[in-house]
Length: 263
Image (cartoon, rainbow, N blue to C red; front, side, top):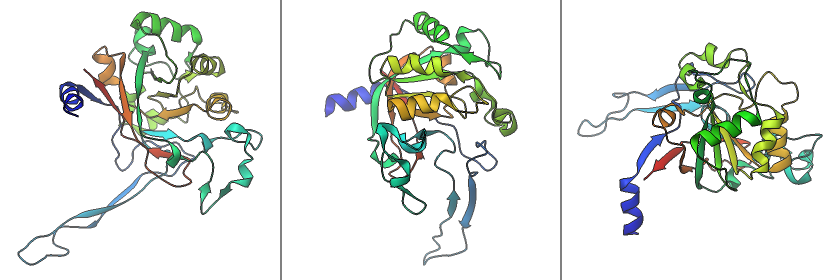
């Protein structure tokens, strides 16, 4: 225990989450983040003058920095593993197979592939497709090899637009991999793939082939709306990735607060 605590105390910690605030970006198929103080200081004053403030919040499971459960997508009515979605879903209970509460806390090797940095731009163009060649080149440039079970994070540079919701969402247009890039990730046995964009894959896309290939066909989680700027600026390409979803029974996704630890 002492050795573990000493390592943690020595580690440099990078926060990979984006902040939540009223008016923050959200994909238009998901509800917005709503916030209000429900009790202000002075609304209730206890003996001795003590008072407290508290808030009410509402948000979707895919709003802000979050992880997709495997049940988030289906194809031809079937979830990952061939389960018929209709047989395990209801409005009240959600999905009873592969829901987000079944994801154990994540302590895995993380790898950053800085595609924007490799292209020598602050942010990739809105229609940029991240190909296997881009992924190979970034891995070589960073001196990393993807290992089975890794968390692979792709930096597009779009985190810089987070405080401008219209620019970040861009009518749901943005850079990312297409199916060939997704197959590059699955062939290396990634546990999860993530990016700093709202949809991970290149959008618009009518069939969302990356989500289908990763979630439905291969059981690989997707993490979206990351902030990878500080990590890239520091030139950190491998790290311990730590995160845990909320235990939302039946949930298709959950907010996370991911951290990168480097000793």
